[in-house]
Length: 193
Image (cartoon, rainbow, N blue to C red; front, side):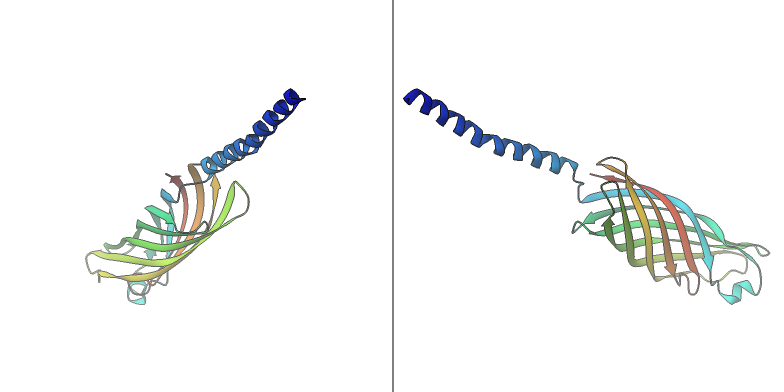
């Protein structure tokens, strides 16, 4: 009888450790599938300018479309909220009948709010400030400017792996260089490290 009790006691002790081992394995799998709060990315697409100053459009037509790109990094302060900082090139606004152009670059600082649709796909919205450098160049083109503009954007990200994501984004830049607004359409890739 004593031998049976020892065997039963040994089995009870061994089985008590089993749930702890299973829970530890689940916790390890969960932590390895979660993304790091740090990420970096690059995006490339097009920009279109609207509301160009009448002083320019009364004199000449403009080429409204250009190439835009950005390189950025971010940190998730909450599972749904990140701080993002990057360098953005909105491209050129070229004048058609006059030798000249405007080029816009700057620092993008934004908050990014994310909503997970499922394990693989989320949608996001951004709002922030664009610290821009509006450079005028060419004969009879005026004027260069450095200032701040408001931005907001929306997009979606598809999780390729636990470390990589691909995104589509629309972003709006308000009153850059005085009156122009920029609309950008980008595809991008994010790396979580």
